[in-house]
Image 1: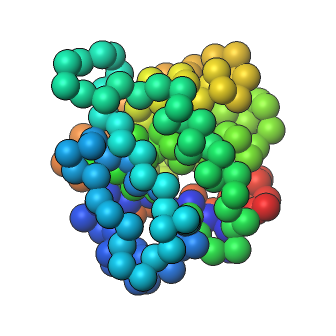
Image 2 (image 1 turned 135 degrees about the vertical axis):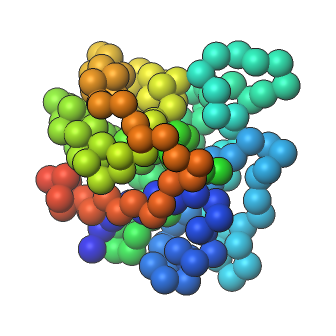
Length: 177
């Protein structure tokens, strides 16, 4: 079944073993960036060095167009036959923004609110990074709908670290590629 898995960094080794994803996206600050896990093909591991911030801060890597375009272009190479794993430090902000962006890219224009509601239902802790979502919105030509959909989500439940969340594409009305 085609699905996107989102988790925190601490769960990556277990998820790699238990779910055997074909592709992995890592979104971490440069100082915490990991190497490709042993035995995993490096060409199927996208490492995005970006800080979890929404405005410029000295010493931090501000999310930019290159980050979101890399995520979306990499995800377009995923055939969906096995899961894709998306993770960040806590599995709450950057990874949820990336998963939301990938789901929107695969869905039709106008599905943004439905996808945001599904994310909230499956991940009460999700707090997609607003800047990454805004960049994806512009990249995909969604005219602010992705941003508005995330803003319409109910407030997240505060957690130190998220849990594994599964987003089966079929349940979003999206087919694998």
